Length: 144
Image (cartoon, rainbow, N blue to C red; front, top):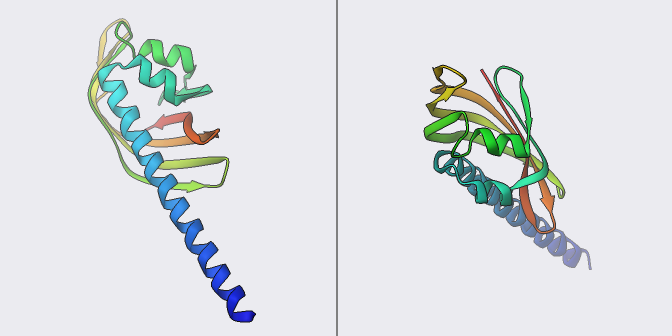
C-alpha cells in the first residue's frame, strides 16, 4: 500500500511538472505573438489576446488601458515598431495567473509630435490571467 501511494504521488508530481512546462511554453508563445502583433500593428491579435482589463505602463510612467494601448500601437498610432523581441523571460505561475520578467529589445520610433527614437533594451514585466482554459496578457510594464 505504501509503495502504491509513493507511485501515485510521483505520477501526480510528474503530471504537474508537465502541465507547468506546457503553460510556460504557452506564455512564451503568447509573448512572441505579442511582439509580432506590435510590429505588424495587428489589432485583431491584440484584441483577442489582451485581457479585458489589460494595462500598459511605459518608461515615462504613463499607463494606458487596452483600447488606448491598441490605438497608440495601431496603424494610425504614435508608435512605429520595426523590430521587437522579449528575451530572457522567466515565468512564475499558479492555476489562475502568472507573471513574466525579462527584457524587451525594440527598434522603432514614436511621433508625438516630433519623431523620437525608442530603440533600445528595456526591462519587461508582464502579468497573465487564465480565462477559461486560455492565457491572456493582463498587464505589461516597460521600464528603463
